[in-house]
Image (cartoon, rainbow, N blue to C red; front, side, top):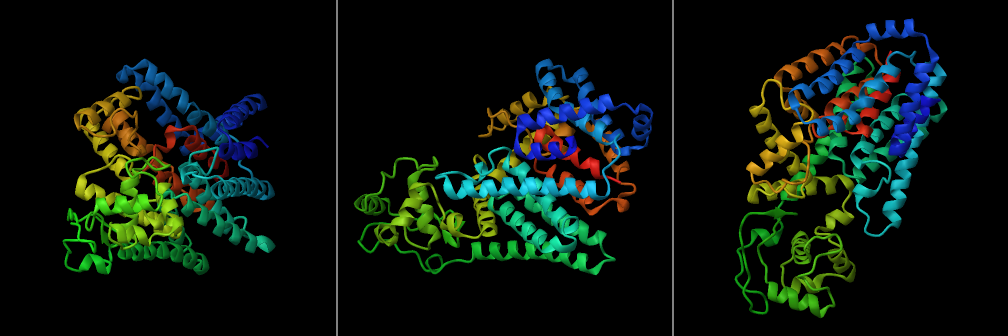
Length: 483
């Protein structure tokens, strides 16, 4: 019962999840059976790896020498030791109990996803990042990925299989709606690994392989569409508007939706026509905080129009309202989810390529943080900065790089780089050795456990998955289902 409640709480509420894992530990302490628990602990390579990792966190105070940061970090990673210790020394649920727990977990994820859809449809100005009110949208997307696998492998048996397939489709759609690049990478990796794992079962191999290939083909097609030049971008540049005013052509090569963003700009005409039509002043920010003039230029550009009076006159009232809300590209509002994700990522890449811009860009911020974290590692290569020293060391490097990300108190957004910076080469080698030992016997694990392992490994490439309670509980909870 406590395991089931923890599975629901970690999706729904930070405080309830905290309470449930404490109750889980308390129940474990009260139930006794210490000889059996000790035997299971000695036999569990996964528990040994987790204990070794936790001890690295604890002992890193010896060389980190930042007591306040160390204490804060140890408070965060306390459940990283407690939850696996409980679940890996407790008999795993089997048979109907196992299926019931997985069904309830999947149902909870589905309900929270439904709440997210309702919020997106009914609340004005809400961001996709705020769709799920109880948990980070990135962490919740990982739950959706695992619930999807449960639907297709565990819950999708017998007479409910069509309902399970429908639910899996809905969860996939929601992952795309909340634009989690990490979750998309996790899904692709899961599909590949599960296809290889089920090579002797053609139906499942075909399913997982088809999912992986469909994802790659879709991204390739949308990338091609993004860079396919519209007629305006291929014609010789005109010097003047239809009204005889001069155009500004920056010709920096910045492309969006197949058109050059800073070509064919006449701010005088654009301002006059926008004001005539009752638009808000272009020197004000939009409702989302994005500069209104920049939003209008990009919106016109995405439609393949000139940025002058003729272009503004072409806009409908609905399109003007979208510009004032900060929608800089109609694809972001009306394109299907994969198209939105690809176009956002490519626009970020174009800005980085031409202007070296990173602030405000999800993918590029990570690249900047990784670069700074690598420089921190090079300064502390053997034993790292310790748990308490990483934040200050990373902030110092961002300052030395004159990065726009300095002063934000950010971490590397890569769990492996975080460990490398904290524990150096010595600690990282120990972590790799400990966790590689846990892969022995992976062929006997269920598809759900394999998918969980893939999700954890891949998410750590772009997130500090084990640096938050939500990530730690996701890491620990699925340990209950190992065989």
